[in-house]
Image 1 (cartoon, rainbow, N blue to C red):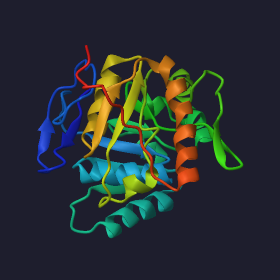
Image 2: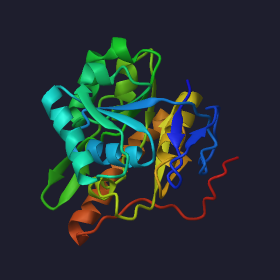
Image 3: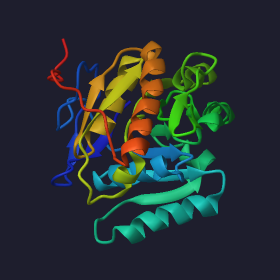
Length: 256
């Protein structure tokens, strides 16, 4: 597959081929690219809206998906209205149409992630699918991580999409900071995937967003720990009224 992103500083297209990529993809992305569209299934929620805004600000064409076309269109319109004059390319469509894009982000509520994947399995064959959902439940003043049947939601999505290449990423990004294009964003994105091409494409996708560094966190087997740690970050943000993200020190991002 081929991925096209634009420079977050100049807006000029970054064209590189996506090949096996270890460590973090430095900006401009080490992974290859040609023009593509990114679809966000269930993209009307806070994280989906935030990712749509940031990816569009980086020059990527984004389609926000929903089970209701009107809701998807309204969400896209709200992003464009909030950030006029930035040349954002964001549209809304039904999930079925959104699944026809080149790279698909799966961002519905966590308990709808696997059912949504199953419903669209035919349209998602041969595609890179990025799972960003976390199975969390609130207990009092903290969040607890649930353990899905296959250990992680991403692994469950991969089982539901045997002909797709699933990556897990973006779990630790604060939705409200993503949605505010004037807010400074500085975070590491841990990317897990069994397929090297899916991992490279996903790392390039997140690296295109200003302030993000994508790191190779291993296979989908690591997704259970990555997803579960989100509960800790959310609890910290609730307790201290903050916007904590994940930033690792002592990692240069070049891999080995």
